[in-house]
Length: 374
Image 1 (tube, rainbow, N blue to C red):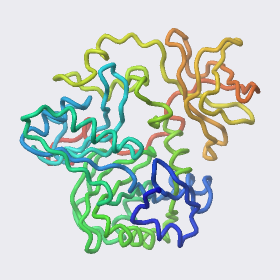
Image 2: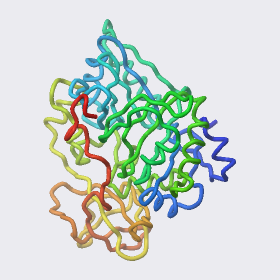
Image 3: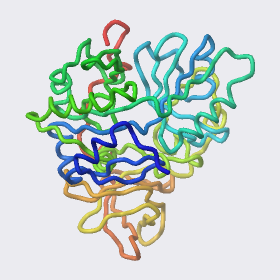
Image 4: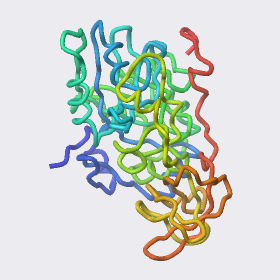
């Protein structure tokens, strides 16, 4: 039986179309994919991300445990900041992609994919050496999460009664409140827009959602579902685990080597250091009608050179877009012509650089931030 987020009753009363995703019952859409995706780019969209897993590693050896398990070095992340990274297996394949949040000198918080949440907890627990002073706190079912994304997100957050200091750079987070709800508010998101991810105790979720919806009514805020979220991440060229990333794919092949810190040792480091990628991830834009789907062959001059891993139609671009992996030796640049075989029908397409639309997040703490200036 699928789990429900604390906000499920509000979604149902709003007439959302509900689906099961990663073991959770979630809103697919409230109005239409086109309207929700457009609102997030032009005004603001509000997403229920309560299905995302929250796992804390805490104790005197928390940083050492996190360094052993993750591709990011928590010691390099200022307190109250976060970074994108991976759990890798011994072969360098991606067990999961996640955000690592540096809470204190003795605690880190991981925001992991819902589909991998139980696996990740077991994986981490099995790889903290006996005798290390590091414990796990799996917060499954105890929290809610919201993503408020778009150009008007900050104004809406303030209008909802936000009290506290807003984080000013991408990846920074603060402890604050809306009404009586104590929250962790992070200037992060997976849409490419400026915005916030908001976490708190499960019992406070409905009140915070309703406060944001009311505050955003005059600003064009729309509640948005999984379908729009997928389009938005695709427009940015962000990968989705289980489609564009998996345990047989390395961060290097995915073009995400920037999310690997080479200081210290971690599981999969040796494999990544000595890897010789046979393929690489590309983006593409379909010319004309048709949408490429996972598993569709990518062709050049009639020869198969790779496979599509995910695709969708972007109403913001008026075109179908997607991503996939091709032979590493292929000299494909933005604008290179390719074909995609979709259900036996050839689709003309061209290689496109990520992102497909301009990225409008704030600069990251890694570029601008220093402790006390976040």
